[in-house]
Figure 1 (tube, rainbow, N blue to C red):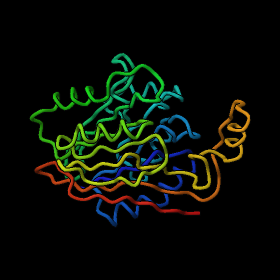
Figure 2: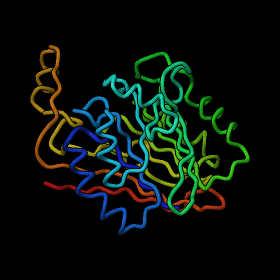
Figure 3: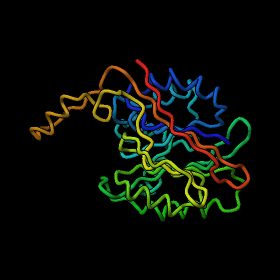
Length: 263
């Protein structure tokens, strides 16, 4: 099974980049399932139903998220639907709307367990332990016929991401980090067969500060005055990780970081 994971889609520029690049990429590389982190799809913070539908129409099959998932309150009713193709981090309290994991299926019948958790180092909120949360989810799915298990850890600290990768090595097919919008150069298959990258980066404005217009961010750092974030314009970058998984062992056999830019 081949899966493609797209880094945080940032605003309209990110959605436009996915629309321009994904259809041919999915076909040319014979991708079975496409997953994308959606928490920044609406103006750089949050996500709404029309964003999800727009990305589904160009080939994204499923979505993960992070700490901005609730920025647009209109998504709450959709998250309450157990079949909605968008996860919120599983280590939020149980009473929070939405699900943190789901088994999805490709057109060829390949089944992938997708888990979304959020880190706790330098991150807002009082969340449950992401390590123990993944343990609990894996135990719930013991003995199930799955062809792969994918984990999106939405976290700030690379140390926390790296630790979870090693903690789950050999037990899941992939652990990929999101949130920083900056791709790391540590993508590899760990000793136990788990594909890993601390952060897959961002799909959105290339000439920006993690997606936002540059000058207001610089002024914020110079003055410490409140910042109104505006989505940057100009060239766009598409960053994603392709992972090939052996259907029988559920171990990763190959991975490739993909970066493309368009005007």
